[in-house]
Length: 68
Length: 479
Ligand SMILES: Cc1cc2nc3c(=O)[nH]c(=O)nc-3n(C[C@H](O)[C@H](O)[C@H](O)COP(=O)(O)O)c2cc1C
Ligand SMILES: [Zn+2]
Image (cartoon, rainbow over all chains, first blue to last red; front, side, top):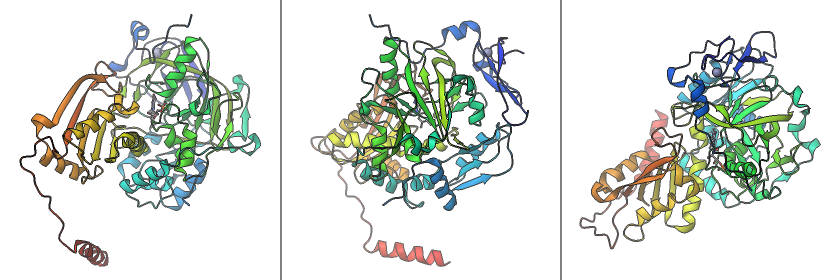
């Protein structure tokens, strides 16, 4: 299975439905996109992520310097 | 004495008794049904809260649109559900004066939020406790959009005044891992920075499903040293909020009636991809690298109810939630220095649009009042379209505000733009994100020494109009 957002292949099952066996939830361990097996994710182009983009995303809030 | 709620459940009962809560008994799919109902409820005039009793694959129920109409908002305050927005504004201001009202600290065994405990991190599975779902189609995952989050100041951990209760979106990233959006100008970011400078974890409690005024105060911009629980007591007209100590942290207190309490810590100096998320400006905020929380302890009520909020193109539930709770603190902060100010309507997109009515003491006074708004902690970054009207204009009556604009404003001198000021980064017109220009429109009548060469006399209603208003209403109701 591939991540619908970043094409990464480190996908984990983070949940299975607590009642019945009706769905699972998957998460990409590269970009943390998550989706349910009952969904068909269609990520718009502007929200797709490449590895370089992930590394360069804005950091909120900025990390302050360590106290000396 | 106004009716007071110490938990979500008692408020849901009141909503139901007043025809302001509907139950969906049939099983629904998590996507897209729950979000779709949130949008639908917002489209309906005086829309109700919507309770989903059964969600496919989950054991518990979900409620949405709890704050999502003026009727629900009035009931939250214990007022009649027909109370107007302006009446509610003045009532909140009256109660505001009661601040601070010390909360009542319950014993652990008295607090409903402690009915069930999960004390091993490896036993925690958020999906077993909360019926999580996607809110907007392009959201990066499942979010808690309405949780009240409690943190303390790492440099003064026992200072109760600096205990912060705030609303920050939470993205679920695993059975016991979540992301949080802590924007730099909010209180939690001050605490986070102090801890990260020392490379220390930030103890945190995430509370879901609260009494309506706890949620309300969590998203109200009050000063850093003002405790939100002491405001809940004020807005409950003097009835203290009931709180209880967190299980993990001696100095953190959570609402005693919460449906679910997640306890853990923010990992210092770690940022991971979070978002996108459909945000209050009616568009998505993109993916960013934001903080991560590990949850190590959970308590919850038996059969917890997951309260969550839909956001769409305004107005939706979030707009009701942060309408008067933005207007009142701004009014209170400005009025302290300018008692001439009559009312503040900051209901548009969390105060990005703001209308202030004021008496005018001297020429240029309207602009001075606008500058004061722009020097409040919230108005400084959020407010960008500022309209100042005379004291006889009701800022909550938009047609009247348009009248003031069309008849009082001379664009060449009354409209100013101030470039390169702080801005609200989630506002898509802010560029670079976090910077903006400010527009001030002074629609007040000129006052000495500003010349007013064409002074006018305002029209007065004919004598006896009140009598006719009552008569016409009566005749209409009999038709
Ligand atoms: C439903 C809702 C969601 C919000 N989400 C966030 C958020 O993710 N991050 C944030 O910094 N502020 C968010 N806010 C705004 C703050 O909660 C609000 O401005 C509050 O006054 C902040 O208080 P503080 O300055 O005491 O932290 C949200 C508000 C509401 C009503
Ligand atoms: Zn991915």
